[in-house]
Structures are given as structure tokens and as C-alpha cells.
Image 1 (cartoon, rainbow, N blue to C red):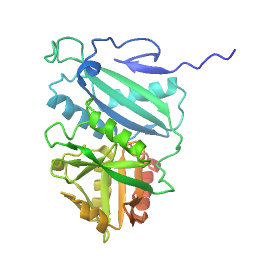
Image 2 (cartoon, helix red, strand yellow):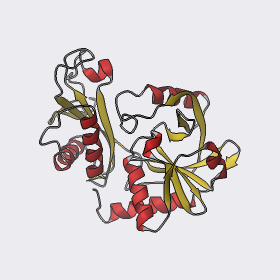
Image 3 (cartoon, one colour):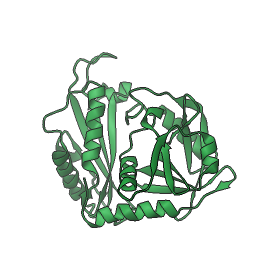
Image 4 (cartoon, helix red, strand yellow):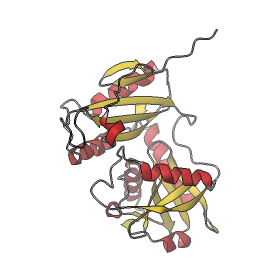
Length: 290
């Protein structure tokens, strides 16, 4: 009889089996969504954009009044991630989830602001860098719940019911992704990505003040655009802009870019999304990971 391969995670700096119980029924992420998380890509043994991930997580911890341990930095977390990928025999590309949650105790009011963390890894089908989807996404709008703009809007927290319900809706209507709108009816983001449109060679993306997640890949695309003298505007993005766009693409830290082939009856090209995917892979090839 074949023995199932064990899989490991890292809990507070210690590698353990994923089957070993470490989270109690009193866990605050479970009870109250009192948590933050980062989804990180490893490419060819490099933890991509780890400094930006750690900057965002520390901003979130500060906003949520969590204590930041002195050794909670990019170098240490990167080391723990690579040790875990090695333990799980993930030699090339991997998807990593880093979850930070406030320690047990209290009801809505916590007894302590100290934190614990959990690192999980899984293999990726896409190897050796970022790959643009061959078939364009079909997308629709999730109207049932609006995302409100406040200081939590830019964070990736454990409070994800908006995205869960949007994901169920996407599945029901057989779409590849759904647009999330803010309280003023403007485009905010999608279920797990930031949104960019292209018009006459310039980029447009919802500003952080519109309530979108402060995406790490969003930041890379804006930086690449600036370095290559491509205009990029952070704006309030109304729906008529989507219909007038030449191109729409979605960004997140694991997949890179996903181009949209169709929204409503409008079809789109993927020239600019292909260009930015090439630029991302140039960063991989020269060993840029921060």
C-alpha cells in the first residue's frame, strides 16, 4: 500500500506537518477574521517582491494594532519560505500563503496584540516564470455587495465574505472573474486581482482611494510603466471606460497578468499585457526578487 506523501507548513518559525493541529477553536482568525495574509510567488528559487509584501503586511499590522516582532522582516521570512519549499520538494515555482493572526484570547476586544504566523506552500503548474493566459478571460460585474472605502480597504484581511460571494456568483454564471464595485459604483478590483485598462497606449487603474487592495503586482506594473515611459493614471474608473478601452488586464502576485478577452459584447486585444509579462520575466531572468 502506497504511503501518502507528508506535506509541511511553518508555524511560528517551526516546520511541522500540515496534519498536526496547531490552531485552536479559540483562534481569532477563525472567530473574528482577525488576520492578514499575503500570497507570494516563488520563481526558480527566488521569493518574488518579498520586500513589497513585507512592507504591505507591516502597514496592515500597524493599522490593525498588531505587535510587529523585531525579527519579522523580509530576509527572515524569505529564508523560512525557501526552507519550507525545500522541505516540500518544490524545486522551481511555488505559491506561498503567509497568514498573520492575533493570538488567542478575548472576545471582540483582544487580550493581547501579539501575533502568530503560518506559512503554507503549494506547487504551481506554471513553471519558470510568468505566463500569459492563451485564452482571454470573460468577466462580469458582481453588483450584490459594494466595497466601502476606508482604511481597511487596501489590506488583505481575513474578512473575505465579499470575495467569497463574488466567487460563488462567478461560478454560477460561468465566468472567469468578476469585477467588484465600490460604494459609488466605480470599478474597484476583481475577486483576487487589480484592474488595468489600456487606451491609446496609456494605462489606467483604480486609485487606492477607490478602495482597491494595494496589490504588490499592481505596484510592479506601475513601476515598469514609469521606467519605460508609459503613461499610467490612477483614477476613478467608471464602467464606460471599460467599454471604450483597447485592452483590459488583471494583476496579482502569483499569476502575474491575465488578459480579458471579453466584457459584455466588447472584445479586447492583449498586446500590452504581453509586453508587461515579458518585462516581469526579465526581472526573473536577472535575479530581481525584491
